[in-house]
Image (tube, rainbow, N blue to C red; front, side, top):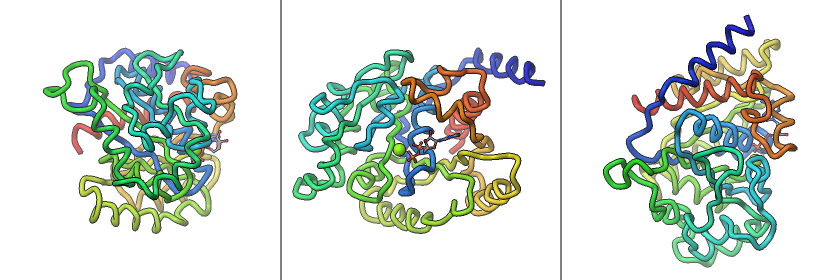
Length: 288
Ligand code: ADP
Ligand code: MG
């Protein structure tokens, strides 16, 4: 049974994946901490890259956990998201290539970013700094504009708050990916998040939509998780990916080795489900 799952996964990995016609900018946000935003950003980014996509991760959390997991330097003073937002440094000058994964690059976050939330308050167009930075990246755009070197995905890992950093992300992308932890309080706070999305849509970014919901830390053995999943699917319907990410020690161990679960333990259930979720995102994207 397990070997057939692995064989299928290997076969799927060999299939050529079609690339989107233009760069998809996806904002991974949920103001709750610990729901799996960073884990999802990192592992989906690697999964998408393994499926032949060109991916840029923008670490927008001063904690820099995505930078750590993707094994890129992010000590104070190196060029980072802070420079892009506060000084307008072009993203292409800041991004560094993943040392481990081809076609994946990262704009790291340093602790300097913690100050940006306040420093940006007095900056012109403070909520559209990231939008400008992403739009100004020479590899962001359509096949016609940019050609085959274009980025297919920009994934933005947001901090656990609805402050100016997350607002910049919501203004900067057209798609939002909300990870929801399959636990009792899963839906708490979601109303506030969706109100914020609506506000942004009306005033700052009419293109914004919640394109993708991903259930994380799913424990198939509990009725609670199944109940939460049903509730989320009942509420959001097709926006919810069919694949849920199981709770797995391998997923939580990987970052301490500077790795994604896909490189740390490619045959694990966590790795296979992030790969499957990435495949769903690719096929959904063409119909959405
Ligand atoms: P956020 O970025 O939303 O704060 P994280 O991605 O950092 O959340 O995840 C919070 C914690 O949960 C981390 O310790 C992470 O390793 C762990 N975690 C995330 N997803 C899983 C999973 N599928 N299985 C086990 N642990 C997980
Ligand atoms: Mg995080």
